[in-house]
Length: 106
View 1 (cartoon, rainbow, N blue to C red):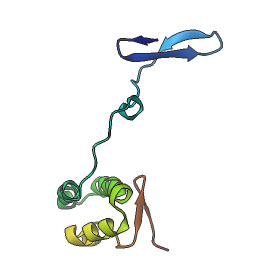
View 2 (view 1 turned 135 degrees about the vertical axis):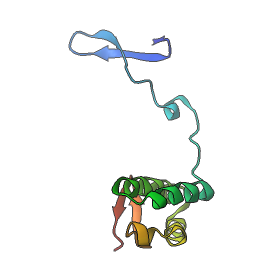
View 3 (view 1 turned 30 degrees about the vertical axis):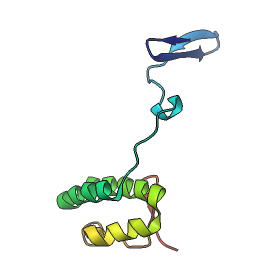
């Protein structure tokens, strides 16, 4: 059943229906995700590097995770060098970024 775009599902021990407070993700409805282009990533990373704080470093990790997922490690290494993230946040070329985490090179 679908009421006003919000899914319903069985809940609890009573077997009743309950409306979901969070609508389903667009990917599950067949919508395509927008891809992170290298140019867009460069633009976003430059903003984060200009601010240079701790939280901006976390945001840069998330952006680099998207780049890694879609374009690979070579693109991540190029952006680190180009934007100067090694100097600002201490990211080293060769570091893998997955799910917003920086995994040191082995």
